Image (cartoon, rainbow, N blue to C red; front, side, top):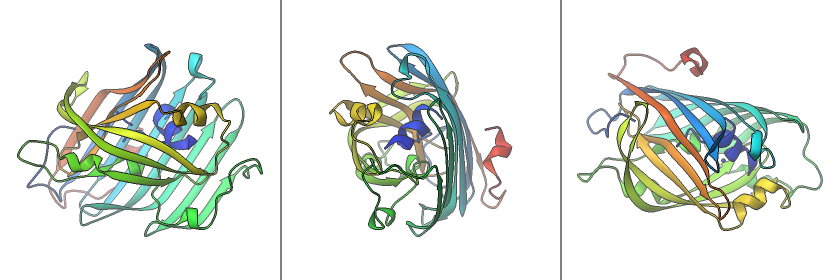
Length: 287
């Protein structure tokens, strides 16, 4: 699932995130791994959008590119299309983002963000249009100790004898997308088996997700209200071959009226030996 405040959900739903593979890795933890994935977005079992994602990694760098669109019966929550990229370094199996960009085009507005990060702190930020005074203001402190929404969807974890580690779910993700600051609080639920039409078939670890808006949002926004009203949310994480990284295979938001589900129909990963290649622009890999 691939599977983001408005942009995490846009990254997951429109692209929007969620991104969040072939095998659980042990001895190739520092090798490279590439992933090509596509997801369908459904609401009340009706297809309302799609997402494509590309992840490229070697032993020291990573790059992520996501594109997507959503609309139809879900347009009250999200409507339009977006493209997102993130790049960074890999240090001791931890991702350290350095750049994040997003472009979202909807019937309401066009939004562009370019962000440069240094050790989890925002050093440069260009965001257009300027935020409204009606939004909860983003302070300088809100721009410190954060990760971008795409990097947040890649989870570093070590394999265990039983399969995927529960520790992948035991974390809080402090996300800033250039406009909105929010936390995603995860907890372990269970493991499951999944199978994409193309690519990965195997075990996933399923985490509950709680969304907490902090700054940059308008509380009355339909999507913010939808995510903040105590709905049951979960993400299922699958491994990327050649790495110790997991990425969302499925994301779901349970509602009394209709469920929102983002699920991979293609999840194809390839592994490479250490030093085989360097990270290039992920757009060159078809996203």
